[in-house]
Image 1 (cartoon, one colour):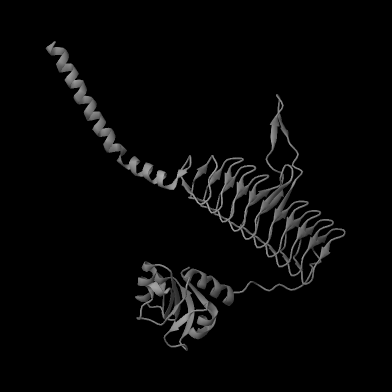
Image 2 (cartoon, rainbow, N blue to C red):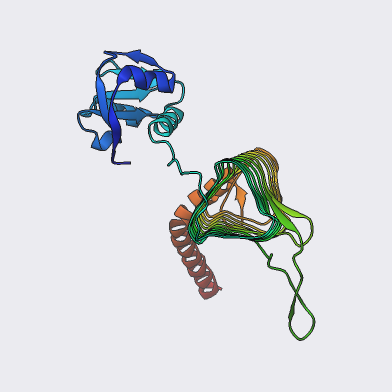
Length: 352
């Protein structure tokens, strides 16, 4: 975020009310934009949630700062909150609400038989909705979305362009699915019959619980049998692959290019950094953290942190990485020792 102009100049007292903070300074001062500390200009509001950010913010040209009590300083008007990052989210959500779409069904959309649409539903141009599908109140189906047969989509959802939702998928309320995501594709299941790979029919389903967000071009495969399930409040980044029969608990975070093989079980509040890979049938406990590029091949107990490939506990991985930095000098020393031993052996042989 370099600088974002606010829809209209906003007094600090209004900002303070929105973020539920404690104002120190003139309540009538107007802010016209939100920016990072490094690029702040006069009129800008800056959020500072670390000591470094706070030092930059209070010495910048920003008009006001939102920060925690720990980092508050008197050089500028400021608003004290418990969690500055959360305050930023609340303010931006309030001042930049989602686009309000009209309650209308495009004449260019294709609507199947026995489709049930709730109140104030928006269906854009060239969207396709299959037979016996139901869509809840105030859900928006953007242009070029494909929704198969017997799909259930809840209320207040947003399905962005070029999303594909296969047959028999269930999606809860307030779910956001970004452009290009594919939900319910057949799982990657084959068996070798001696001559060729024989496809195992994937006859299960996908269930997306309430308040889930799915990033652009993410793929969530249907189960072989039963269901692939994404727990309430889980947030999935772009280009994530979730294979058949995976079950994710509530409020997990999966960053870009995470890949889960089949039948992975993930607990609540698990966090996975970018490009994490998890082998099939692995079980991950509640509140586990997998650092970026971790390759997890075995089960992870609750509240543990893992890193590296193959995965090790975070502390063990840090020790190994530190030791690797010393390896060139250690090898040099080892060669010197070998040379000295060989010289001593040669001297001993010559004397005998």
